[in-house]
Length: 340
Image (tube, helix red, strand yellow):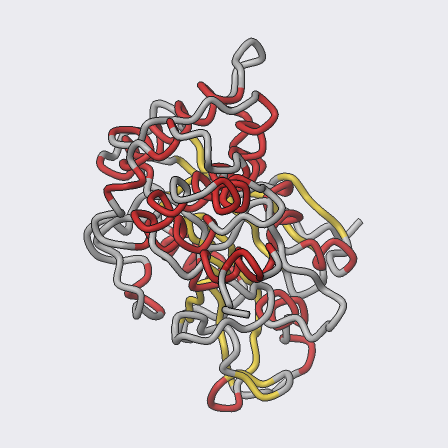
């Protein structure tokens, strides 16, 4: 008996179709009733790989622009696509699908930090809230406008186990200046500042600023710093709300490819046999088209397009690093070490 697609299980047919590009999938969906049934089945979903690949192209695959008007694409693909796609493409090129309000809420949760829900008005549905937040991000990436957020929040992890949520003026927000003040208060200003990307999302990356030195006095070490950056816990799960960028697909674990710089360590020691000392500062930096994936340390916060930031709050920290909830001994709103 000759082998044909009609003789294969639908799961295997779906795997074969998932290797096609968007243009070919559209054509295949019209070839036969059986192939169309496979293509439209949300549980088989051969579209996912082609859509994600099309979004990564530069420019994105032109077949994506009006793909949503076809009733052959399962709706869950659009939730994932809108969690990853470039904001300009969503706002100005794509034909938006007719998703339910709960699906737009899922799009919002998978793309944005939880604290950004503050920009959704009570009377607003999730589709306009999603698009309005995207528009605000595009505007803030291109300008120094601070009308939407006059004060920017950030998190500081203290070496005594407590943590602070602090804020500074958005107009003059400078992580380096703020962290230098922290270093001055802890007598560490003479030491170099190290900066790491904790995780990257579609519109923002979480930066960690800290100080490293050779081990000397144990009381200066910040044990929560190493545990935040590279948690040695096999029970941790990948996070999906928000969804990490492809360069951090395995987060909180190591993602191969050269962009995840968190794991240059041997046990508790960082590169060069150093440890994290003093306080650690976390900020949310809005992504810019001018970013270089290979940036390290000071180059992460200086240069064109590197001066736009958004607030990072407790709810954001628990979403991107839920394992820290049991490690932080006290959460303090405002300055102080929590030493009652």
